[in-house]
Length: 477
Ligand code: BG6
Image 1 (cartoon, protein in one colour):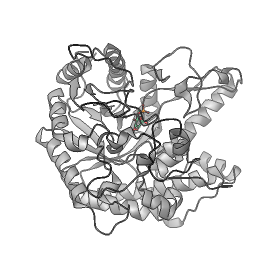
Image 2 (tube, helix red, strand yellow):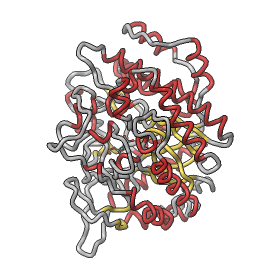
Image 3 (cartoon, protein in one colour):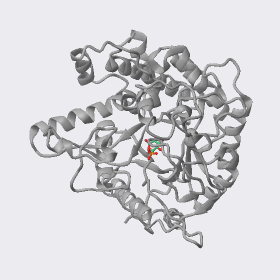
Image 4 (cartoon, helix red, strand yellow):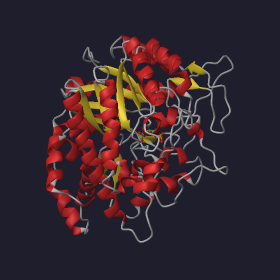
């Protein structure tokens, strides 16, 4: 191991809709993420194939309480400070500021909450990083416009950005526009508030929405640069290199195509224009974008300062129908096959620290912009011993191996890696399943999927371990 850069941002990450709770207080409006229940209906709703624009009594919604960070933020940030975090990534709940998504007057209580959160971080010397939009589309805008199907979403989003930049200029340096923007293609309701109408051509709808989100992202970047000249504003991609299952050229071509689909958004966000292959593919598939000459200029002017990305796993693809039968439960969203060289987590997510190094190198070769791992971590079941200890050695192993990969990225490959905010640094409900049992934190929260628990915060063994890693700047692993 060699030393990490002195200003490396060792961090932790959360999202408003997963940790804040308090989903209906202080005028907060309902958002897409609030109507995603725990259980079998979650996936079809997130996909946009089952319409659900309100909550009901038949379902459970663990995220409505989350870990109630809304009321516990002081205690939580104090713990982050004890851990030694240099950076805390969190998101803004759009409907806490604008309950209907495009209200004339912002909700002061909502803004005050984020003021306090930011000030509390700064009090301890923790750099706040804001994700402007983490999977939450105001339900009022889904009803009014059909979510990101409609160009008018851009103005509503810019209203939110204008308020935020104005409020936090001089305080918040690091920003991300849309969390895992490419998730729009995989979970259209969760990512973009899209519910498909009967007979609608899915690809046409999703790529149209993608164009509007890309325009919104570019406009936000441009505005951020005008209002906050020192700010760093990045994109956020659900990354993970696609591997061909064999050296059969057909597998290699399939891997390349899957990669390109995945990099579709970041290609535009970093280069300011649609890549040639995407234009060709859209032509071939009969997808027509509502794109004006002004749009082309907007995309050019709004390129990002850094590449923020989540990395949990690589993905493997094959053209062989037999191989395609071999999947794990974690291969669903990105339709990948089981890689026989990798172990899997309890939720079927394949564990590939080397893949993080590969992904970083491919991203840098492609874009030559600073990189930031804004999510990484292991979702696992934790057991609380009688004495209150939580021995999560599996999580320590996972984090250690991924930190070693980052060390190689910096010290062997020489790439500019700005930091790493580990996901769910404090336990919170899962985005894909909605449950509380899939825990990522180094801080345990006493809360289960059924809503039982005291919400008490407890340190896991990984807390002390990560604290040592940070204080030794990555030398003690
Ligand atoms: C990312 C999301 O996809 O992965 C987070 O940005 C999410 O919101 C995280 O929680 C882990 O996924 P999951 O489904 O295990 O919570």
